[in-house]
Image (cartoon, rainbow, N blue to C red; front, side, top):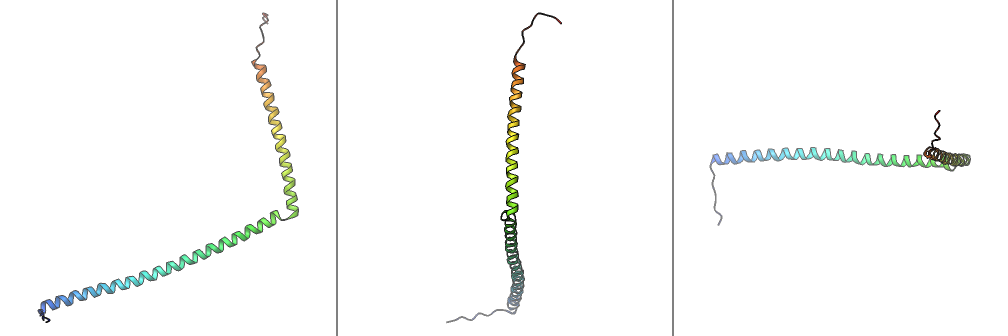
Amino acid sequence: MVKKVTISDREYRLLKRTNSIIQKNVNFLETENKKNRFYYDVLWECYCDSLKRVDNLKDSLNNIHQQLYDETYCSGSLRHELDELNKKYTKLMGEYEATLCKLADAQDSVKKEEEKVKPWSGRIL
């Protein structure tokens, strides 16, 4: 058998007030949740848009690099000019290294002459 419980008016008002406060908190949390969901959705859309923009920028940068490569290395006259400059550079580097070797040899011979001590002849000038 179910036993009936009776409550006083005071207890009833207290329960009603408590339920009201709880309902207000629930309503507040639901509105906050909706706001947070909205902000999350907005941020997510911004993030997706930024990823798309980054991808577009990468694609355009790759296209520009490809165009630059084509203009630089696939052009016959520029390729010939680059080969000529490489030949001149190689020749100048060879001359530079030869000059450094000659300089090192000259410095070695000067050091050897300085190391030789001339014997004293006994004469005073």
